[in-house]
Image 1 (cartoon, helix red, strand yellow):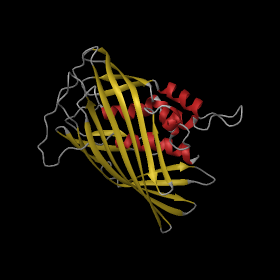
Image 2 (cartoon, rainbow, N blue to C red):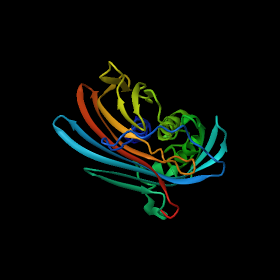
Image 3 (tube, rainbow, N blue to C red):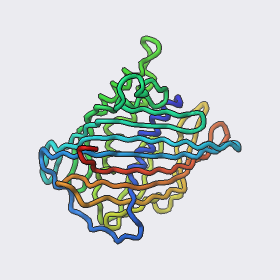
Image 4 (cartoon, one colour):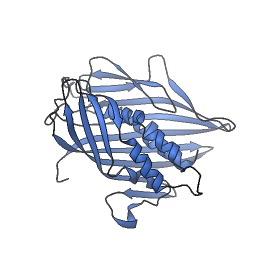
Amino acid sequence: MTYRSLFLNVLFGLSASVCAWSGDAATTAPPMPVVSGYQFIVGTNQLYAYSLKQTVSWNSAGDALTYQSTLMWKFLLTVVEATPERAVLEATILRVQATHEGPGSRRLVDSGIKGEQNGADDPLIGHLLALGGAVLTLVMNPTTGHISDVRGGEAIVVKINKQVPALIAGDSQPLDAAAKAAFSGEALGRIWNQLLAQPRDTSVRVPLGPPLNGELERQWQGAQFTLLLPTGTDHLDATLVGDPTPVAVKLSALTGKGGVNVNLKNGMPGGSKGELGFLLTFNALTQPVGQQHLMNWEFVPLTLDR
């Protein structure tokens, strides 16, 4: 697995999925009342921005490095169908911006910039521009916010493969496998399920995607929640790369808190924001590597002039 394909998997797989479970509300504020679901009206639309900032502090063999990555989607959410039991929404991604900064690296992509300065040729994050203009179709239960299906990821994979073609005719495109994993219906469903989740009166098990394939526990208190590893568990294990040079990883020291804005506008999502932290410990060729991850994210409605 190349560093570039691993970055795509991490940014849109593990990190995006984990981060999407977080949201932040003032810890001193009283719990907000639980709402009874979305009241969608066909034809209603709302502009949103989803932003993610991830800081990774890396330590190995006495060396310490810190990198920061950011990602922003500006998208229009439109109600296509709506009944009390089922809603169909379309999310049209209007603009994508991403950065990656750290020692020896300063990268920027922005689909809003025309011409060669948009970062499409960046070997690490240039492929993210393929999200610009993408249309995702979400099938939801309005009462709980549960997303049962997400369609449209295949078109993103096609755009990535055109942007990053095979170097030799007949070979597979270098990012094809990673893109299919990151933008599958299942992977996108994990992200949107948490982005649009409604408060519950019980704790909820939330599945992690590959490579961990474990679960976290989200405990609601009104419209606020905390994130925990399952009771009796202090870490999760996974193997990123198999033999002959295996790379194992352990996730531990996870902390998270969050909340959603239940003051919905015209029956549409009101947004949320939050933070999440965890430690990843890698073991490759007997050399341990520690990564402390801190994520902040925000999902907010925008006015049309923003």
